[in-house]
Length: 517
Image (cartoon, rainbow, N blue to C red):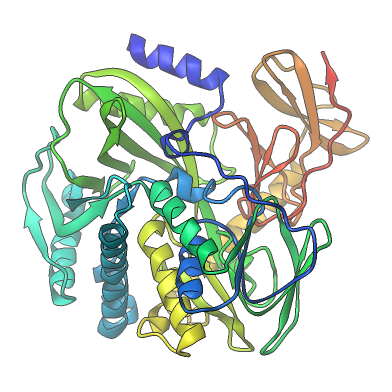
């Protein structure tokens, strides 16, 4: 208990630290300062964007990656590091909702992505802590036994090496688990940073601190991307790989995606981790894997997901994971903690491919639902094939224009009703004229009829911002686990000073007279 409390006290006075970032060098590529013309412009320098750039430069195309921050610092740097085709209990659901053929496409795409990374790591001798591991989805609830059995049956029918297990090597009491063979874990940021020089060697360009804020062009293109500083990039093909598309048209993706946050803690334990990568089927969600570090083996525990901008006392999410770790292991320390944000589509299958039938050379990769390391790789392979060959064997299951089913129509209604409820409730909420805040705390007050977010840092400085989201105007909620203002509608996030942390917004918040207490 003492270790946990000491770690918590230390963490919450300092920003979260991702092991993936702490264990790799920083990047420092230039910002775009002039107009540019390329074959392919890629918006977003995460795993989907860098993989796409690598593949397309290998094909001899002139490619530019445009990243708003620094490459590989977003969701890619805050993952579990699992490389697997086992995406929860997805295959029985896919067979039921989309049919055998599309379920097979999804299985084959993700298995191919895993093997692509494994082969590249071996051929290029990339040091990224890659190791094959069995993957498990387990349950301690009788309500999930039939679902686990159905998943085993579906996976086997789709060509995946799967089995039903009654025990785990972890100290967990379970009723059943589905096991996939030959899955993997790795350090995604090490892997991707090794690809960057290969992109540059083939004539590719990477621009950091280059936020794209607008898109011009229609039909077959060409398209023009406009940056916050006014530079323009004209391209025959554009790939939107910035996690959450910033543009409203085509596709209206802000009505077809929802965002969730999840939390991670790293435990130093006396026990050796038995191997394997694990996630449970029920709530609260719990994911486990070993984590090789220069200081020795650690254990990565992830879970506690919730919709962005929703929920109270988010610090408790970390503490819940710490409690879980201490129930299983003799924990000596919690050296790292971080959180991640993910986008989910209406049917749990990412949108990868042509953004709309009216814009065949405009592509999107989003909605990875916490399984982005394989699906980002799928994105690169699939979009490469569409650009180079005009088709992909997996394009139907991932098609952003796929036909809606009854379940997706119902989910569309649920998610957009949630957005409307948060938009309205935020505007109608009774807010005091003046609030007092302690160091490390935030609250909302009104000034001339306007909502103002007030945060006092540990040094006593007051930070005041307009809490209306710059995306579509929803009222932001304070996240006390990350010291950020989060949007409950579409997931945009901002620092205490209103700078952008997460899209889809492309504008910062209005700052209102920062001053010392």
